[in-house]
Length: 635
Image (cartoon, rainbow, N blue to C red; front, side):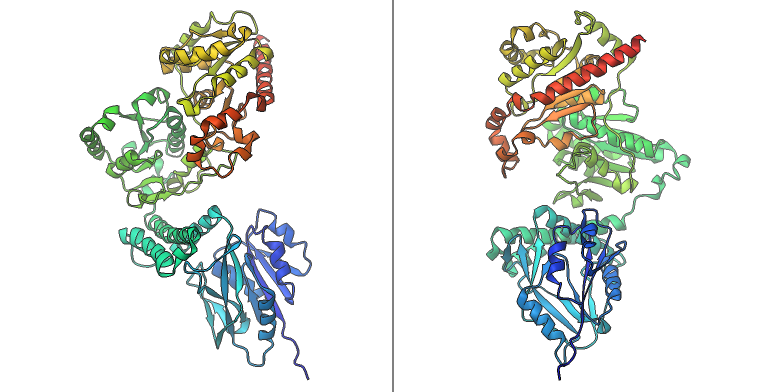
């Protein structure tokens, strides 16, 4: 007489597993019951699961892995449980072994599965994963999860433990960004487990522990035999360890309670003082003013100081959110002795927090010498000893808010926790400066209805400058579509380059160009630009100034600049084009260095006819908007 077949429940917990969900449900279709507990996925996973009538679907907020898995197990109606991850697959022979095992006369209480780690579509044979095994099959009545771990949960088993012969396939490594994000997330969750332990992370935890993790996986566990894959996996596993202690340091050093907004009204300005560090170019400095504005918004009684290069000071002039500008002079770079004196001078002022928006060696040293317990900056492999809060910043834009904005506001997370105040760079001109600009351009408009268009004729260097022959074609498009005067933005030393483009233009376009009209200073230029109807030209500081003055702009990005770093959909009056918008296949898998090496060939492919329709639409749209405003003003 045959014994009755034992029933089995297949369990999963999921979040955003749309790429796996169909295949994994089919993979366990032999189970008598399939239960999926989803943490409110946003990628369509939930909707897809509900297409399977056999699947019992539950949505539940995620607290931690142990809690979610314990809940899922409690929902199972069968004693035998197959608990898998969505990125795991049973082979046919392993599935048969599972069915045979649960129907033996004297089975164990729980079974380990060895796993084959898949690096994309290839098996990773070493790098520490050759002995990887996990409990996947067990009797519900004989096990429970420990509550002291929030990730890589521990199963406590009452009774015998055994191992199945055949391996489970684990598609863990989809791509580099995905696995990196996974390791960082696991590291942060592990930090929660360590929080109650009586120690604080030291250089030992930040240097030795990650280094040993890499050495263990790459050398002791033969990762070098996996070639490049072994290096990548060993590094990312070490990064997970580093992320754990970085997060633990953050958790054990919460922000000073005196900076709470609830206590701010009773706090004197001398007690709350922030330092924002941003050397580099005009666009970068302008972008970092949003940090200052956000701090003033949340802490209106605080003092905000900013360190910036002396050539960028004009864009900070008149900014109401900056109380003091500390000038980083050229001589600091020319003389180590003078630079060291500057660094020592920073110790005179006690800051509640220092925010390093630049993230280079100079600003690293400035941060280190600054007198503050709270130091925030971008995470790099060596910055844990400098910053109390090293922030990981994404390199992939979301196309809505440019990275230059979102990544800077992210630096405020350790202070503000949830910063819902989103702002963008602004420039502040005095009434006298505006009047001076109006007088300067009074004689330029020859006829009624003639528009004034600033042309960003040259980039900051040749790798950021649209080819002259193409720029001339762009300029020839403008007079055809609107009556305008064109102002070339260049300095006297660049006149030869400007004339080269001028001479390539048609005679009709040349008659529209004011070739000898330029401002004497950056502030004068800002004033003149504020009176222009629009700006067209190379992406760079000029375009950032136009955005900060709310002057419509159309720019072309250099092929080696990431468009999403400086442009997003939030800029409604600003359009931009990039070669990758039209010819993405030209970039292939080139990194930034290769793109820069091939910049001339890529620029040659960036022909004006690719974006001519977008340019014409921009011109006509803004001419219509300007005329509409003029009509309203006349009324």
